[in-house]
Image (cartoon, rainbow over all chains, first blue to last red; front, side, top):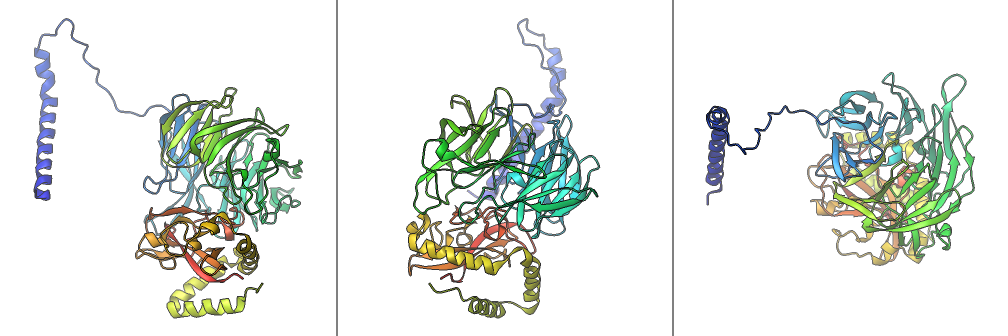
Length: 402
Length: 181
């Protein structure tokens, strides 16, 4: 068959159908009004007005994630953990990061565009979404930002939600500080040899450094940022602290976790308090993991391998039994750890394997495990899979308060 | 163990670049490298990687034990020990050339891989090809001695398109730089 003729035929049929539909739509009410209504006929359906389903803010059991899919492009999606249904989708560029304001309704998206798509003038912006339709409410120009696969700690809000911190790398590393009330960048802080951002207090933040220390930035008496380095607390060449370490925005407690599962609890502040490190493997009754070539044991692994339940002080770690330097592959179990007493509480197998985990911050939390195609909603206390849904490949995840 | 001969390596790289690039292009790239230079202390990195590579060559990682030398469209091709992304060899390019429609970034991160053919460790520059939509073929994630993002010169998650006309990621090459031993 001539494909062009066939296509033209389909177009003609489609056009005719459309015309008939329009004609029927115009003529039907008159005709229908003339027909006697049967006694048991269902009521006439009401006419409708198109609108937007109201968005009431991120609920305690909802999960948001950005998509990392070359075909679908960017985007931030909200899924209700109680139903596993998609609630909302917000536009974003590829390689975006995002955070929710403390009001749970305002979404900040750190992203990058070019005027001609893949070229032209580069524009780094902090886009603001909110209101009942979760609609765009403007942008704040940024001086730059890191473009990489999504990393949770490249963007964060201050605990009170007043300031946004954006890790920039173009290629000198720094952090831009944005006043979200004034909607403008107030300063950029250079952090040579360091990266990522972990906020604390009113205006402070810490960054991990390649020499094994922390860079601590806070306002001095003149109201300007000063940066100082702490002691070295890990050896990056032997056992680096993972990018996806976790920090509780409310308390300022950071758990810097290494490839081999050593947890360094640090109370962030101008003078950070370094508590003794503990081993996830030792907490589970195993020998400590080392970076010795060929040592097969359990290590944290995945794209976003940690979630922290701050109220209950529980660390959820996605774990994989493998050799060293395989910490980005999917994990097969989620270990639930008492971060206070350094004890393993549970080992929950995940269906197939998972790359990301998240825990909701409420009194009856839900545990999320995500693979490239699936989201599983789990009971953190029993490990039971409550429900599941197919998803677009996820980049990073945020729950309420993150 | 032989030490890395940085001078010879630099000379070889310079000659290779001079043979392939126009003066304007060379100046543009030189500018980009100069801009990037403060963030990429390449020589110490290469020395450190060379030392690492020696240990790796002696003991072997999971990747190096399973690596092969004949198929550069497979994730276990020996040069790909630290690659993250789409293989340019599957997208119309090769291990050291970008597919038409994209352009190579003058910046990269450096890894070291063991060649099972001669049991030597080589420095490999993982360079991104930029400007075209993501190729989406032969996606690999190998992490032998890949470092966190706060040590950028050894991180494979950063989009290494600095110095090109476009930051659109297309695919990744694994360009041989020289011996790491």
